[in-house]
Length: 305
Ligand code: XMP
Image 1 (cartoon, rainbow, N blue to C red):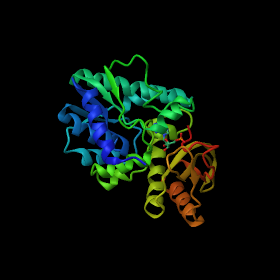
Image 2 (image 1 turned 90 degrees about the vertical axis):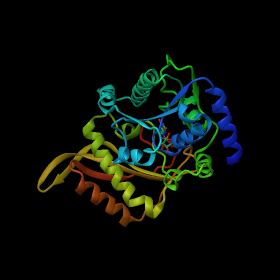
Image 3 (image 1 turned 90 degrees about the horizontal axis):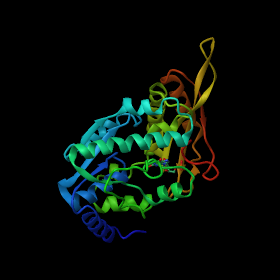
């Protein structure tokens, strides 16, 4: 386990040296990784740090309002880029292509912001498991392998590159970040796009966003899973009233894990699953069926793409 104080001193020093001569942009998502990065960089370079929240249109329910509330006091810049992200995702079915399209758009936004603000460095909250999975060719995490090669920054700084998620949480505590951030569930960089199998559209994302919200409401407080969410995995038949219809199939996932490299599904009580299924099918029009995924990682991954 990491020695948090020592890590903080070394990371602050590293950022000071790596970004000695310019401004630094970073994507602040409100997750524990990017929040820790921002806190370290703020200590290292003060207001030469330019944190940017990109509203991709692929975020969780109420996320934009939450970020503005949490980080409103620092110099946070918000960019509403949802139309552009949906445009980039149009017609893409392959999961790797999706990640690349999202990574590419992210980087272009940051290059644009860098130009506007004069920043020459990019700070990223990449952690150790992100690198391993990207280097091992399992999938490109949008903040690593998805990055287009013609990136136009003078340098990319990744102070958390050797840490596991639980170590990042310890550092978050030592930095004095609010418990809400310290204990927040992981959320993938490409957002809800990897929770919609097949082509991503605003309509599908709206459905999966509501389903995610219901799963979080039903599970987080009572079971404290390492991660839980819903994904839109296909279409099937259903019946509403007397009418047979085609409706979405939502899969619910709730797992415990140390670091995301392996994971075990929660053995949820039937009543809980029953309530989640009733809520999702009654509160979200167009959903005909809810299933619970009991597959560990391996052989499945945690996310669906
Ligand atoms: P998988 O699906 O690979 O996920 O078992 C392991 C953990 O990583 C998260 N994840 C991502 N995080 N960018 C990220 O920052 C990504 O592209 C990405 N893909 C998966 C996932 O939510 C889980 O916690």
